[in-house]
Length: 182
Image (cartoon, rainbow, N blue to C red; front, side):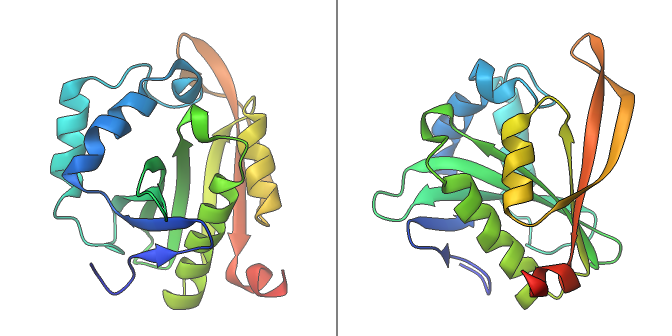
């Protein structure tokens, strides 16, 4: 597939999206509990088409781009969720986001996938710093980031008007030097 994928863990295969993933991608993106803390409320067919147009020919590790990594079961190939990587700062930094089908949550998949992506970004791509911004009410995302070694750097109070109300966000980060100590 590329120099970086497939990326295998004990239970997962991380790889670029394929067109055959789009129905499941749309299905879990339309789950209310999945969309709760995300920028969308629904994921319409035109959103899926726009997503695919932006991803199908996108190279991994391209500055100023968001690359979505499909998280699939290693044995069955079932799409479980995705991890987004925003490459910026001339390739020295990346921002992460993650989405998991609600039926696949609380099984350790998100942690397993995120650790694999962090390892790829630090060990193979020599990124200096990784970051993530999450809704302050999203306790699952907070626990996931902290379990993976990220530290909370900021609490942005009412910094975003989100789904009809002002909301707080937390800024998390992890330096390559910190990752090496974990």
